[in-house]
Length: 196
Image (cartoon, rainbow, N blue to C red; front, top):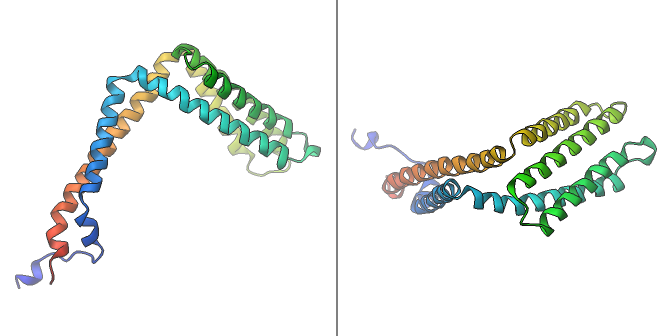
């Protein structure tokens, strides 16, 4: 009777439980990363400048490629996507060549990019509605981009700090959950390796 009351673990748990320290290390690193973001938010914004520049540049290049490669010149909407791509490339290059841009200026730059991109996406969606049935999603994405741009114009520094704090909170919460998983796996270790 006593033997039947022992919980049975899945066969694959043994190797995972033996490496319980992996999620623990990941969790600790994640918590430390989140703590550093909370302690040095301005430095985090500086890193965000570089990441945003890379994102805008790559996104712009892909939009240009898509406009030139996949769009039908006869439909007339390809140039809107091309302009959105060019805007992304310009913003990305400006961010890279002038990394000392202040957080306020960067926020306005991001806001301008978001509004321009959103406007071009909405315009392209209205021109696509005759050919593509799912243009509503492109309109919603464009509207979201415009709204984000307007918010950044009115609350530039607060918006950037909010992004940093959001990422920091996520990192700390994810780290805590990973640590809890690690200790749970550690507790399952002896049961997983025990032979019935």
